[in-house]
Image 1 (cartoon, rainbow, N blue to C red):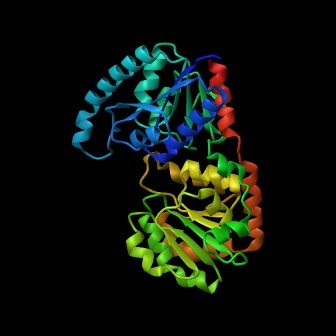
Image 2 (image 1 turned 90 degrees about the horizontal axis):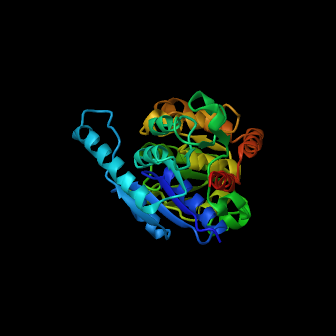
Length: 360
């Protein structure tokens, strides 16, 4: 049995980290003897989540450039130089057969050094509008796995492979019945369910919108599963009722998607890939607080395919009720669900690991 050594670098957010973990799990399934090492950024989500998933991780002292004047920008050159040297030491000590990057601060210096050492490299870009790190790395890596068409606007065309984004296996399989999923959340099986997603910490503007719109939902006969986030639960739990279930966080995402008839959500890349697989009509409200405004571009890519509806935060007061009522039309929902199915790539993880194997 071949003893492969693989380094995977990605994190900073769940959108970068969870695809990396999905790849690691699939590679380990195929090659049980493989030695997989993660490289992340000190103080970020990956430093806790990767060991919890059973993998080793090394941390780099690295941060991104801030858009405003900040002391952190003064420190950036020093951190970058330190991270390049640390990356070189990790590569020389671990001697990987391949290095994979899924985005995040740490992947830049690590994959740059790996390409200098002629180690086979692959980046996986989750978004329809890539960040500056992956744009720079694209010149030196061997392969680029992408989730959206038209990415040759940003990357060398001969390196691109359209794979989709890795998603959780339980969601890709989507085996749970809708009625059973609604009962799991103490919902009425025959009643339409609106699911609201704002991320694990929550989205302040979405929560305010839902609170202001509870009368609309009641008049339209909807029941809610409202994931308001851990930061906001104490404030909004007063609205809990027989038809409004409020939760700080939902770990059983396959049941949550299965219970939904329609969804209001942010538009992170991983979430949209999951929505395509479960084919639930969605109203997307992109977060304006992300680099390169990539959530807006992700959402727009689905809207252009007739697979979702989009309202920016600035336009919520003016447009929400009109757009939401349009979403309740059964024909609109059916059309959106069909278009989502066309965009689904449930086997993305396997395809990306195929590409990694091809580099070995």
